[in-house]
Image 1 (spheres, one colour):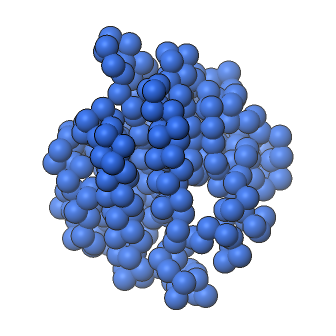
Image 2 (cartoon, rainbow, N blue to C red):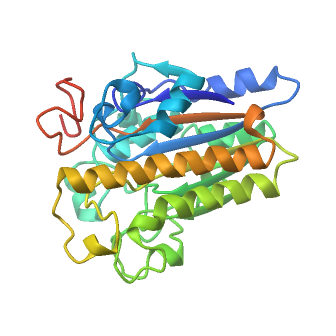
Image 3 (tube, one colour):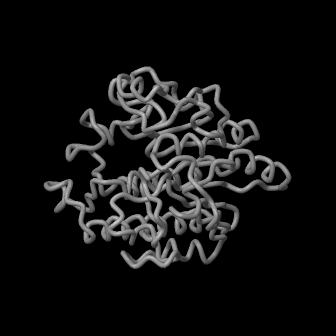
Length: 300
């Protein structure tokens, strides 16, 4: 299995990748499946392969050992929406009037920014779709939709054949959005089950479309706060402690292991490229332990 590990201080941090996959894929006789895992607010120091000791991450460490670990990349922005805009478009997010996290219409006006990513922008999934890929997005989007922004373009406008989004998306999945908010204890898929839900959807999509090359976003909610690693923590969200973070990181790592095992069961482990990264670095940093000593972090 081929893999690229773009971790919070490694890939977090790239703005110019959108055109490269299409060029390399077009020259290959059999184009690889591509799974793009984006962990929300992950820190470089959260991973063992970058020297972190907050939690054991053997599956992610193995992914790094089996592939390429990148360490000289920068995020398009130290906050969610513009960083994601850079990853999707391969361009500076300010060019598309996304300069902070997308929020209410009034909040977006105060930031002098758009309410959603313009579908006229370059799009990595659209470019791959036009090159013959089946495309899907499962997980957090945060490039339009949610709050009072009720007219964002659908996922299809950006080049996705299938999608299941969270609350801040044009098409939130009903099992994730019982309440009109980012998450709720009443959601059918609980906060601590979401990463597994996204992995399951990704594997199912690839299984159904395995005769074509597939590009799949698996964009996680974790380890963004609140850390709700299990039912015992659901009653007291907002207590952001190291033990809770440890449990969240262990679950992310377990699900990456499930993803790789699922690909092996499908016989696709040698024909799949996994890209693993974060959007903008960690918060809180726990005295820079989560940044592995680097001074930058989310909101820096």
